[in-house]
Image (cartoon, rainbow, N blue to C red; front, side, top):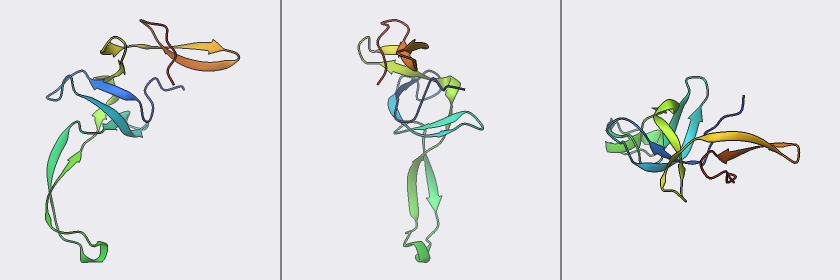
Length: 105
């Protein structure tokens, strides 16, 4: 199955407290269909010190996963969320924006 949203894509959040934020996909989990987006869905975590790993105790910020249905690919030309369609070019399956028909890199 070809994924419409992939690693290192620029996405925009559609729902939730971070609605409208734009970030880059850092990690994908295909089993539960979630993505981790850089700088989005940040939470504070109280971390215990682990001397073996040289980790200090304190409060750290980290990103939590977002379901893939709550993000959409971001089109820089139109400055809006866009949909993806697949097309065949020279025998290769490529992704492109539905609105502008421009290929994704």
